[in-house]
Length: 205
Image (cartoon, rainbow, N blue to C red; front, side, top):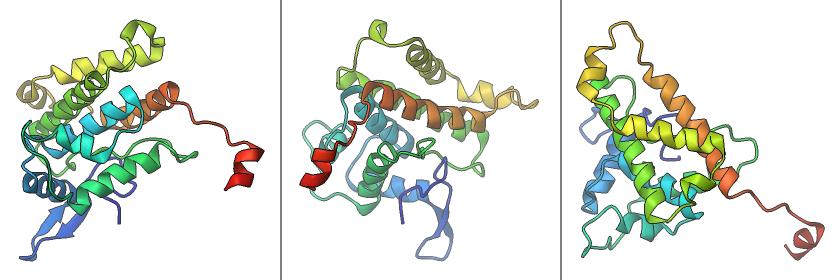
């Protein structure tokens, strides 16, 4: 089973050893804690996506190295994190895929925690893109620059203010998640278009 299955966010219930339900997001947090990561799942996944967008496919261990202290390196990679990595690799290469499955908490979490995770995710994407020295903003198309602007706006949100001012549902976090899910996939494919398969390459397989 994949880390986030085909959902837009990680909110599938699984079971703890004591019988209480555990979400995929919590399982990812446990996996990150086990390697001494400084990031939560949202930020970690954002960093991974940002690295792929900025520089193309990134090695799994290089991604994980960005999540821990500089002088530390994971001795073993938890299965949950490997699945999260493989899922992204599959999602960006599946022809009929309409978006990325984002590692974000489910709607059962308090609004301020959902917003905090969304902020961490956006900051992670921007950080990952920067450390891979992605193309300069001025060289990007209008739509791609707009996505970066949106990520910057999200990264600067105040979760408490958003939660308190959301009585009229003016801030639709699920709509934002769906937007980022598709926009980030489109951005990746624009910067790293798939190489068309040729007859010669098929014969060599």
